[in-house]
Image (cartoon, rainbow, N blue to C red):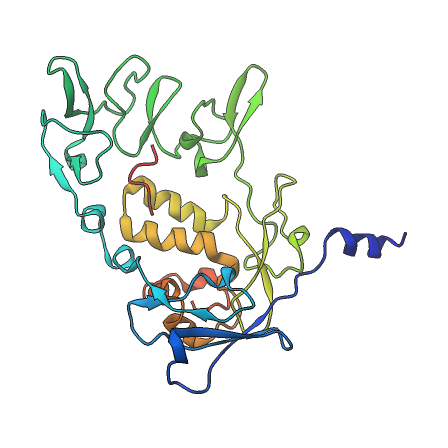
Length: 307
């Protein structure tokens, strides 16, 4: 069999739709947000009538017309701190607490966490361990931005490549561990081969420097029908996301998580009206001015603790 034909059979190229804005600025009837023309493989978008409405993520759009729905995540973008977003109450030392609560939390600014206090006979806010302390035999947890690695509290993502570890979050970028002789060590975080953004026809074009793993080749939400590779954990936006998690910088975390997870979709000539259609994109654009260099030609639920 012809090798080129075999490759096409194994890795068919994506056929990406084109995204355009409706010429008529009046809202589409029936709360409609986009229409699809199968003959031209084209989505025509129109802004939702009200600011609190949005479309689904365009990756989920189908061949049927789409409709506006409630936009639940506006507070996530508008908030600048965890407390502002979650509206929780901070509790003081020795205050009885619930380790599963999201509305009443121990004051992490004072290095307090919720754990079982044997003297009180209940869960209570208590002081955390310090960096470098023995965490293997203590009921107290490591401080925020630290993890228990080989029985000691270490700062997240600060070990060097090749350092012994049993907690992946201690390694740079939080990537995989590999076994060397009888121990596990921090391995290199896979990063995209070549520069980003990277155009692709299939996932075979989305390789990295260090492993045989591939990322997805996805259709950009653009007017050219062009597809791009998603990112690897060692690419710069993901590294910035990990840093925001470590420093508990909520607004940076929201921004870099969105960029990292949607990188391939955000490339190419994105129609201007998308910001009023897919509201997550609209909120992202508002805070993108200082980070647009990472997005090439683009217009450029969070877990409270990952430790």
